[in-house]
Image (cartoon, rainbow, N blue to C red; front, side):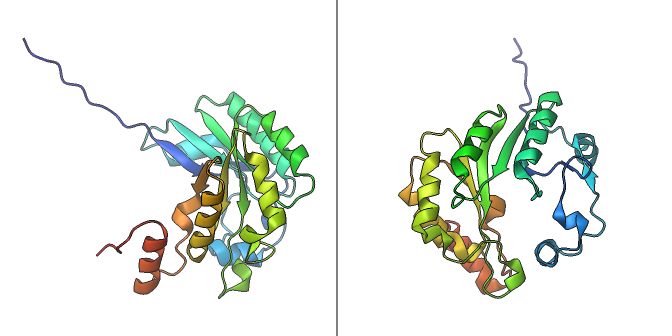
Length: 220
């Protein structure tokens, strides 16, 4: 008797995707040239003003995408944008989870979290905390030490028991501060965006990034 062989396929889930529509939401980076965003990603003048699921699936047609995690795209009205994304997810044949924007120092944070909890596909929130000491255009937080701010930490505590993961977008030099936050709040599930943004790709900088991300010895 011959035992049949099976090929197991690994599911592909895109953990960080942006779908957006310039006609449905207003994005400041498209309304005017944004020096900060340009310092972050380079010349973005060719970036389409609308990029929807069909565009994404065409771009990834060489692979079968089993799901994706949509992240907010710095619109001028984050609640309107994530509500639009919920409608997009409901109409999609591809499973889509959502990540909404927060500011943990915002006095209206409780109301925003209530809205987010009402969206069935929203599973996480995130805040942009990237801070580059060498380039002021790449500083996206109000200040460098925000993760040690008691007011900010009090806002973060609202995620305890909220069944929402937390993404804190930081650059590689900030990973030790992020680790301190994670250790303070073991009840909250955290994600690290884009592998901790290694902004210094020289030999020494890359090695420090590896160590901060959890490797005790840099790769050779």
